[in-house]
Length: 90
Image (cartoon, rainbow, N blue to C red; front, top):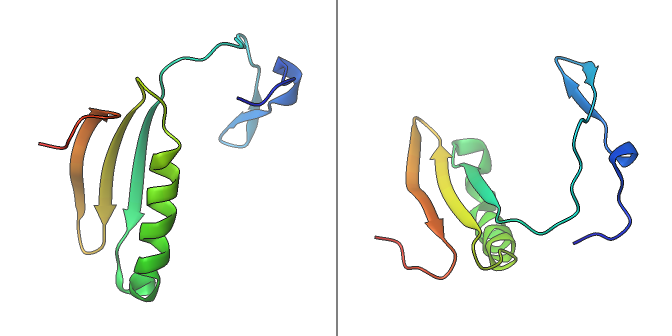
C-alpha cells in the first residue's frame, strides 16, 4: 500500500476528457487483475524477460487477490480464468 495518497492525487480520463473521482477509499481490498501478454513475433526475442516480469508481478499478489491471464499473437486466448492466489490452476 502506498501511504498518503488522496483523491486529488489521481487523474482519470475517458476519451481524453477528465472524469471526476467520486470515491477514494484507503483500505485493502482483494484485487482482480488480468495479465495480457503479447506473444506475437515482435516480442518473441523478449519472452524470457516477459516471463520473469510476469512471475515477479504475480508474486506481489496478496491473499484473496485473483488473477487471470490471456495472451495474443495470431489470435486472442484466455489462458486461465480468475484464480485466487494460493490455489493451483485447474
